[in-house]
Image (cartoon, rainbow, N blue to C red; front, side, top):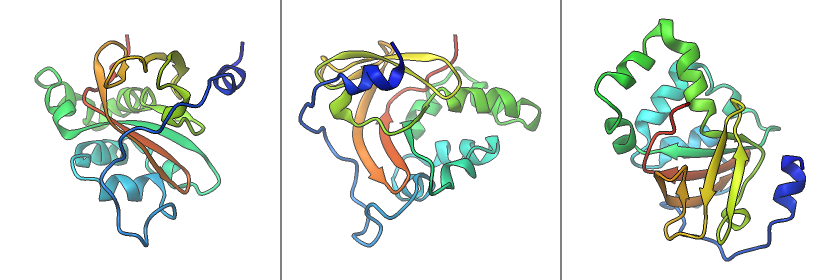
Length: 167
């Protein structure tokens, strides 16, 4: 069964907690990078996306993405030296792979996983498991969803409390 068909079969579930509100002028008119910059606690992710070279792609108006966005605290909780190693220029491809493991091509609203257990294919080809039957919903039995459905012009952001590492 393909991803598109699997997601279309999911029933609607009431929306979840929203992220901190942006100024009214920005609502639904900003892209993912602008929303990341306006959301407190996501500056490490913002910097990592810039360092990986992925930020330019997230600015494309005609594309559509879903980003499972780890908080600054999630990055700080990585084993000592992990983030520093990933941010080294010679490790750009590894950083890009980690960050693509947080990115879905297409919009994935919380009503497509709340109340259900689903597997989602990420932009790096890996698959994550979202257990939307738990409160809060959990990704890969580890990362809790702290905020959901921050939607903008080219995508949706769901904030999580852990970094999803490959493997």
